[in-house]
Image 1 (cartoon, rainbow, N blue to C red):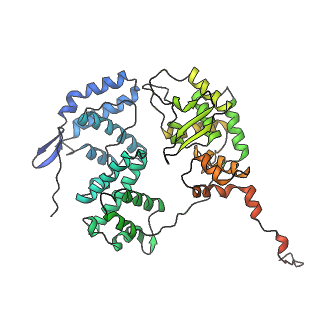
Image 2 (cartoon, helix red, strand yellow):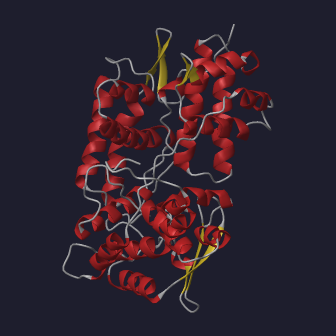
Image 3 (tube, one colour):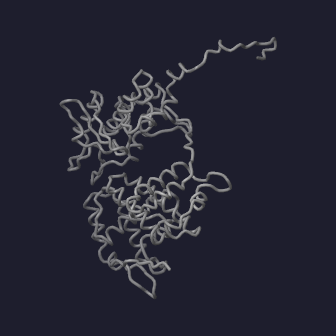
Amino acid sequence: MICIVRFMTSSQIIIGGLYTMNVQNLKDNYPDLINHMKKEGYSESYINYISYEIKRIIKFHQEKKWSSYEDVYYAYEEYCSKLTLANKRIYLNIIKCFDLYNDYPNGKRRPCFMPSNAYSKLYSEFKAVVECYCDIERKNGKAENTIYTNQDRISNFFLFLYQHGCSCLDEITIKAVQSFFISDNKVCRSYSNKNGIESALRACIPIYPKCEDIIGYLPRIKNKRENIQYLTHEEVDKFKEALKKNNNSLTFRDKAVGYVVAYLGLRNCDVTKLTLDSIDWNNDILYIKQQKTGISLKLPLTAIIGNAIYLYIMRERKQTHSKYLFISHNRPFGKLTPSSISFIINKIMNIAGIRQNSGDRKGSHIFRHYTATKLIGNGIAQPVVSTILGHSHPSSLNTYLSADFINLKKCALDIEIFNLEVSTDGKV
C-alpha cells in the first residue's frame, strides 16, 4: 500500500474528509494585491483580468469543489484554447503566489507553480524524482522554460509507466519503457521528447542511481530534421534598410534589437540577458554569458550597433533601476522576454515586406543561421565560426552547412565524367 501524505496550507481546509480551498484569506486581502498592481503601473486591462479570476474563485470554489489552484486551472483545460489557457496559467500563478506565499508581482517572470496535469497524478517516488530534477536544474541555472518542458515530458513518461504497472523506479522494465516510445512497431515519440526525458533522468542519477539503468532502456530515435529555411542576401538587405528608415513605426528599442540580432546572430534569450554593464564603450566590446551553454562571449561592438544602442538609451529607455539593457516601455519596466524579441523581429520583417508567405520561417534564430552560413561562405574556419556563435560543441554547426551553397558547389561532380549518349528522340 502506498501512503500519500499531503501538507495543508492556510488556504486549505477539510470538509467531509476532502480537501477544499479556504478562500477567506484571498477574500479579505485581495484588494491589497489590486492596489499594489495599480501602484506598480500594471495596465488596467491586466488588473481587470486578475480581479475577474479572483472573484470567480471566491464565487465558485465550493460549487466546483476546487481543492487547489491547480484544480481551477484543470477546469479551464476542458474548454479553453491553448492561448487562453496560457494566459489563465499566468493569472492563477500570480493569485496563488499572493494568497499562499504573500508574494506580490513585480513585473519579473517567476517559476510557475502550476504543474502539468500528469505531474499532479503522480505518486510517491515518481513525483519525488520530478521534483528532484527541477531543484537540481534550478540550482544549475537552467532556463525555466527548459525545466518546465522537461518536467512535463518526464511526468507524462512516469504516468504512462504507472498506468502500465510500474509503481516505483525498481519496477520499471525495458518493455514498459519501449512501449512508451514505440507502438505497433512504429516510433510514436519524437527525438526531442526522448532527449528531454533522458536529460531529466541523467540530472537525478546522483540522488536516484536507478535512473542510469532507465536511460539504458530508452530506444534510439533518429533526430529527423527538415530542411532549414534560410535568409537570402536580398531579404537581409531589405531588413537592414527598414532599420535605417525613420518614417516607420519602429521605436529606437526595436531598431537596436534588430541591429543586434541581424549583425551578431545572438539567440533571443541572450539578447534579453544583455545588461548595461555588458557594453564596454571604451573598447567597443559586447560581453555576454550565453544562457543555453553557459559559455562567455566577447563580441565586437561595431559603430552601427553601438550607435543604435546609444540612441535607444539616451532618447527612449526609461529611467529605472533595472540592470537590463532592453526593457518594456510600460511600468514596472521589466526585462523583455525571448518572445518579445521574436515579436520585434517579426514586426521589422513585416515592415520590410519579407517572409510574408504562409509557412515562412520568422523570428530571430534565422539570423543566427544566416550569420553562420555567411561566415562559412567567406572562408572562415568552422572552429572559428563555432567560437563566434558560442557553440559548446563543433558538431552544432552541422545543421547550418546545408545552406553553404558556395562550398556545396565544390562537392558537385562534373557531368562530363559520365559517358552519356543521347538518342535522336532526346532520351539518355
